[in-house]
Amino acid sequence: SGPEPFRKIASDYYRRQVQAHQEKIGRLQREKSRIATKAAEALNKANAAQQAASRTKALSTVQSKLKEAQRYNEEYAKHQRELSKIEGKITDEMKRKGDAERNLQREEKREADKAQRAAQQLAREQESRARRLESTTTQHEHQLHGIGHALRSHDHLHRQAQEAIDRL
Image (cartoon, one colour):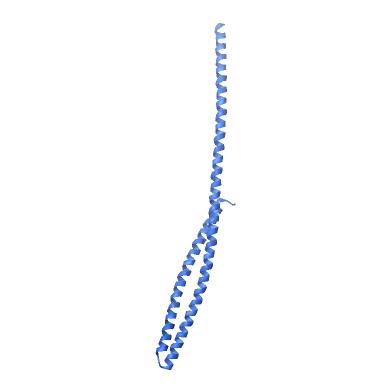
């Protein structure tokens, strides 16, 4: 599973990826809006030229306006192709963002699971230390009791020896 710093780096990496994909989607959407505006302008100009051609009587003006309308229609079609490409890029970028989000969620879950396991291990270690300390304390109490008994016995023997010396 790897050391914790690596995991943290992995989740940070995916977090930055998600953010980068979101920013790129935003840029593509702004570009899409800009091109859609150009497409609408071209279509309006093509329609205006078409209407101007239908209102005029002079053949040369009609031909000129029809060529103008055709040029704007071609410009509109070009913008539509650009929009289609950008929408494809947005779709691809959204898929990449979704992949990065899934990877981020997976890494965050791994980090949380690892932290939980570490906390459980720490709790077990603390419990074990507490049991060892309790056992050691109990052993020391027994030793102190034994020492107390030995001192009382020694004190009793010392009094007997002193009484024997005093009788001499």
